[in-house]
Length: 89
Image 1 (cartoon, rainbow, N blue to C red):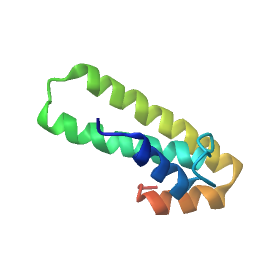
Image 2: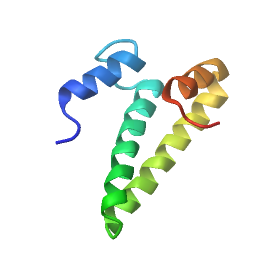
Image 3: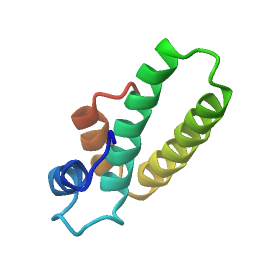
Image 4: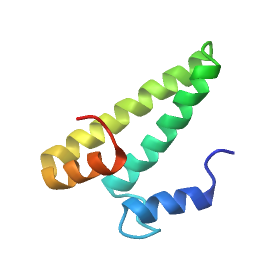
């Protein structure tokens, strides 16, 4: 499996307050970004996988909504997260 508990704990500890901080916007966006990168690589090899393409589209939408929320709530946290993840904006 591409995403085990150790990798999730690493993402949450790096972008959240601690390992158990799974609900913060930063940790959720970081997890979504990791999953989006993985699905993008999968679709490069399996371009006819329409179910994964739809899942990727929905995941990008969820990440966009969370980023929009963070942008309105705290612009400095938004800018720091965008820079840390290497997202364009």
